[in-house]
Image 1 (cartoon, rainbow, N blue to C red):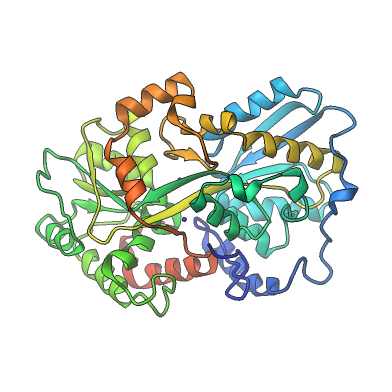
Image 2: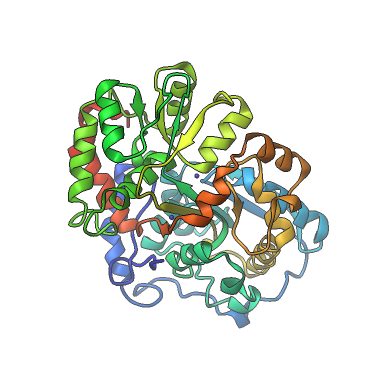
Length: 418
């Protein structure tokens, strides 16, 4: 809903996981400008920690924009903070938008000198697009003292996702993601266990395997980024030069794919109504739609031989130009959200399973409805799969963009619903 820095190839910046062609092109074109340290020439300089008060003079209202569906995981944390620290944040106003809209929206407000968004909740897509355009306030190490023990407290894969942000965002939630295959056991009694078996199954059942357009879909993205490990490609981190087997496999598989849905929800509905019998999935996309009743409870999951997790995370990012008092409040809020008690809320109903990014958070700490949902709709095999298989960070955004572009050109053809 996986470690390298976010600054491109040299410091490895890139663009979004889910972005429109316009945003992708703009971000890639500007990304190389971030090869140095800090802001590009002429850009606003980051605030120094000493110039930001420990807390605002009076309670502030924070305007929070969610472009990742993150509020499903963190709304309870925001509510808890307001209840516990109403003298710091009196009210949180939340808004939602899509990741492709984010950079243009923030830049327009900054250029107008009228910033109406104080905090953004985003995946690596919006994070990267904003870094490329110099939109975000650097938080680490500039304000590391306000977030004590940040890296030590993270789960190791979450810490690598934090490295990916290069200090321009703070990881709030994490999950191992996928790639998984979700299937209907009534129509697929013997699911594929290897990549070759999946290809043979798709050939024998044309149109019955689906994954969504990768740049628009977490499961589609992890399927794309996970295949190089499964297939033993020469360099799973280099889609342009190291994915020879992956590109051939996806082209071969594409012969038996009727179309590529524009988003994951459509694949899940197709699994439920019988249009598809096997779809690409992740832990969260497996559990949460079954909790909600979108997908029948009895659907099953499997992995392919050579499977390694591709991890994912959501971040808190702050636009440059936020009022110092509000920035002080945001730093207090983020610190609060990363405490184990609040992190337990991230179990939610499996949307980003498991969800917590910090150590020492267990399901028995989660709200009762989360515990019930996970115990009824979770899978006993997930604990072993998570513990026993390597975890690889998502590709750096620039490499993701290259992968998405090549997929569009060489795999999708006219079959992609973009």
